[in-house]
Length: 118
Image (cartoon, rainbow, N blue to C red):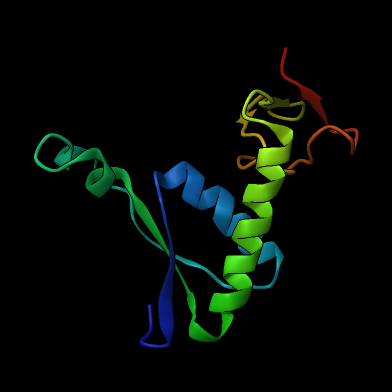
């Protein structure tokens, strides 16, 4: 991480951070993830401190990065929290609002490579 990077977002856990990082990188915004790898601290500190992950981006990309996250969250809101999906390629559960599998990169249903979760 360089001094030119700024904190864009604090994700609840590494999985959320990875999904957001993929969306940001797809928009051409480089991301550095920090934290979220301290399960041994859980109990000594709160879950947020142990599992939370920070997304850092170049300062010049802060505005566009916020726009990408807001767009993604709005899309998730329109789809509703009850619409998880399962990747047809690898079987990994996908979170609502994300168009690609975080594990293998396959596209969600609609692209013909994924199926809705029963």
